[in-house]
Length: 305
Image (cartoon, rainbow, N blue to C red; front, side, top):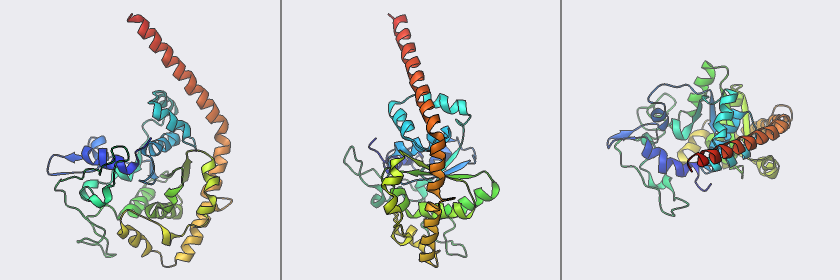
């Protein structure tokens, strides 16, 4: 409950995706055994938010829930019933594109101490990686006609979304909203939201609890793309250079979020209202499954006495 996605990237994903002393690749490649796997959905999120909440948002999406508070609580407990619930819905094997896993950190930031930060529990800097994988920034040669580095993975998010949406009409976006709604201040997330909306992709907000939306509505109405943040300044510059009229973009962003008919929040409210009874039923089912597992544990313990 203390570690962010950034912490997990440096403490687990980068070490876990290293291939010997010479280099490494994407963690998704390791997890899928090198087999090409198309995602059904992409997840937009903040690296500064809790990793537990990122996973909970994905689980909640698999459960068809717009809130991930229950999923987060069950993940904290290591509750096995979550897997059974996902299996029952037929979503246990659904695939998601998550940048932390799907982008090779070894060809981007693994050796950059300035990006690493400090572990909040150990209170010491995250270890960097000494692999020899070549690193490519947004404008490193060779470049395309638009000046983007061909070998860099960090400047291809828009290309990735456009390709997957063009080749799969059912491709969707999941937006994991952290407790402070800081996800909407991240440059790449805003760019991904605008791109997905332009392409007509289904977009789904996932929040920890309903009150998050109300608590941060005022700050969301003040969002400006000029104020967006990123770990690397070049990412902000790369996005801003593609926006000829920031005032028009900001107005469009407000429309995407707040339009009463089709905005992200309006769509989320409609889904949440429909899912409240389902959420109560799911909580009761989980409680029943937990009691069943406890009873089995008692019986197993008695058998060994």
